[in-house]
Image 1 (cartoon, helix red, strand yellow):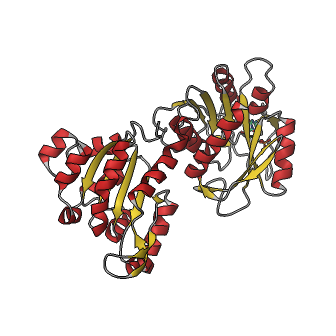
Image 2 (cartoon, helix red, strand yellow; image 1 turned 90 degrees about the vertical axis):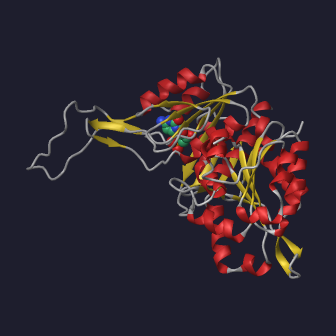
Image 3 (tube, rainbow, N blue to C red; image 1 turned 45 degrees about the horizontal axis):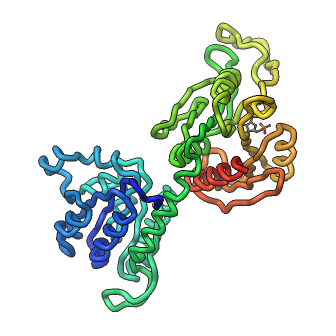
Amino acid sequence: MSPLTNKRILLGISGGIAAYKSADLVRRLKDRGAEVRVVMTAGAQKFVQPLTFQALSSNPVHSDLLDPAAEAAMGHIELAKWAELILIAPASAQVMAKLTCGMADDLLNTLCLASEAPLALAPAMNQAMWRHPATTANAKTLRDRGVHLWGPAAGSQACGDIGPGRMLEPAELVLQAETMFGSSDCLQGKNVVITAGPTREALDPVRYLSNHSSGKMGFALAKAAQRAGAQVTLIAGPVNLATPAHVKRVDVVDAREMRAAAERAADLCDIFISAAAVADFRPAAAAEQKIKKQEDHDESSIALIKNPDIVAGIAARVERRPFTVGFAAETQQVEQYARSKLQRKNLDMIIANDVSRADSGFNSDHNAVTVIDRNGSDTLPPALKTDLARQLIEIIATKAQQ
Ligand code: C5P
């Protein structure tokens, strides 16, 4: 069975001569069992008739943002929610520029703004347009935002030029889409619990101790695990992130609440991933009333006591012990410290990252990690947290089965 079976793919077609190849792309996606809906820009319709795509996709073609009849059948927000992947092929220089700016002046770019589905572009344009600094900058911005750029290939172009800017062939685009959805079944039937974000340890009713964890890595893992077929419980400290679709979220504030939620959820789970940055210490006693400033004291101190180690508690279980994965955020001797943590906490795997790097770690969208278990280690290249999460879920799924 193809990883594209029953996947809902929204194919955007923009104005370029490569639009004629998109007819073959629709046929190939349908052959692999995908459901395809086509959105065409006005420019695309100058190259190929919408009827061609309607016949091939077995669905009406969408093209108008403000068409009451089309909106009544399937409105643009409904369409944005329907898609599990938005693929724009061909993606013209204009489409890339509009997406970079976040414009919403036609149906296609509005859908891209409104959808939470992954977005992939198959750029197709004249080689000078592709090489132009404006397009180069747009491509970088889009990549940094997590948009996938598939191609372009180099070669002879319809205009007679030779160089980069050819749309990837439909067969190659299908392969890219299959690879993207490829890991989608690796956690089928599994129950996964993930902790994410910081904890807040109250000093008094208005103050707390905490850290800079954004929760992005844990949330990306939850999304990737759910996409890979798992039932996911995400135990989140205070973060400002949307809950990934079909994920059960349990909000907690401090480490003791997080431990209680984790212990409860872990009873039924196969894999426990501890991505939270749990505060190691908490104030020995949280004052019931706001602590007042003492005008005659220039110094003050807070007594701290150790918080429970949540992941170590789960890994120490004799019964109902899940495959247990921890994270190690280090600023030096990353692998060495992470390995000793793996042993001390009795983990099955630890994912180590160097948080001293400005371009990755805590608040960044990027990360670079080394995966360590008892048998060895594997360093993954720097990547967006969303892409890294997919790779990590595949590695965890494989190791958990061994
Ligand atoms: O000891 P350290 O905090 O560096 O260990 C990091 C790993 O342990 C992470 O997986 C983190 O989620 C987990 N941890 C925990 N409970 C704590 C402290 C850390 O689960 N109190």
